[in-house]
Amino acid sequence: MSDNALWDFSLRLYGRPGVAPACLPLQDEAGADVNLLMFLLWCAVTDRPLDAAAVAAADARIAPWRAAVIEPLRTVRRALKVAPLAEFGSEAYRARIKAVELEAERLVQDTLFRAAPLPGAPLDRVAAAQGHLGLYAHHLGRPIPEGSREVLLGALASA
Image 1 (tube, rainbow, N blue to C red):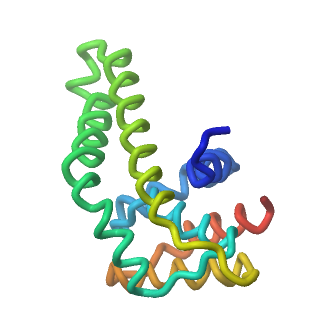
Image 2 (tube, rainbow, N blue to C red):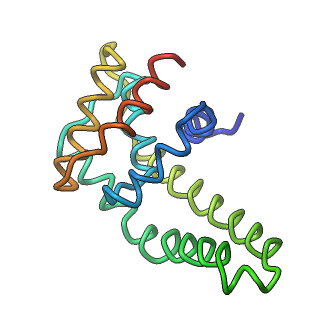
């Protein structure tokens, strides 16, 4: 356990069956930030209601770090996995970059955690999560892929 309940929640949820592979289309097809998605889901399960302005503000808060740090690290890590770069025997190097990328994501979640709204009245966590994901889809201007959304909500409901 860390001193960041959002990070602890994210690690547990991401480790549930099917969640990690469901997050790839969210990033690659929907342009979603998985750290922000985890924040939205955590807010739902910790009775923190969000509106469209709160979702937009959270995204704006982390967008510069995502663009300047996380996305370039992800690009390098993925490039090292396939030919011709994989032929350089770069797996140990790739693992170090992955560790740095994970630390960069933890820093994003620290930022989101510190700026989280205070808990309010008890929420129906699945309904709140659906609502938060809907707000994010609207913010992105595209739908959250249904299969990924269902995996996340299912993992959340069974947690």
